[in-house]
Image 1 (cartoon, rainbow, N blue to C red):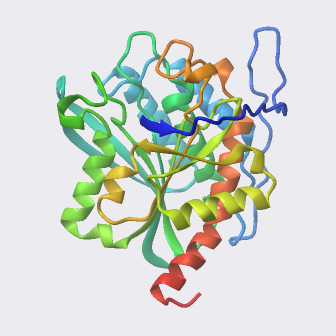
Image 2 (image 1 turned 90 degrees about the vertical axis):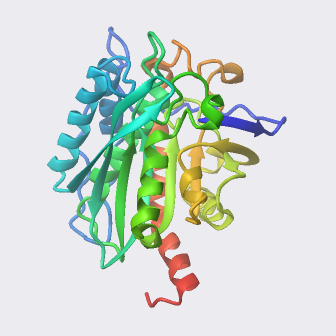
Length: 325
């Protein structure tokens, strides 16, 4: 993602709650049995340790740029996990024309059918920037790990709207974000938005919730100026209602990310992103983006908010369309 601006005034927010047992080797998640729900209207609890275990697994694969052997292993892992939850998985394979030639890429879609075919998309990217030694624990890893755990938690839930969990390939720039007339980035999301617009499916996509860089131990999120106002308001009010107000700040920033191609097609969008990773964002796109800088609890905070905001998002969509509840 590319950060266009952020407010001058910032407050540092410290996360003190730890949910892991740390052994002598350090940063080892202790797996716990997640709370499963027998109520189809209520998702299971988002399990922070499970999310962290997914993140650890992905990071252990090493750098995961598009087209690499490591990203293929990540794809197999993500698809295997989604299928183990009983979800329908769609593999969207395509060739992207990049600043470094044609690269085979894959978007991954997991579907939870709803009572209607209209779609709410929850998305993030799983690739890492093509940069030697860059393992992308937060940037690329945390979004994929959180999506996996949200998909598991919601896998038995029956909502009015169909839910798609989308893992985008090719979010990162191969050279620089501004290269190639500003298009050396967001290859997967641009491909999917264009494809859905061309075949008419974009009309069924009623809202998109994007998560990115949400694993930072010091989680502080700004309201994205490029996002749809009513979606931002619902997410922020949900965060305040369930006790996460200190992580969802009232300052604004503006971000170019995987939500923009869908915004350009008229889809209501929100980007939930913490672009304050390390002192003065000094860990971003560096070798400092490592597992020890991340927290399963931060992913849980975002996952809880997204999941608990869905009923209100659906209510708002129904009010907009005049549909019955």
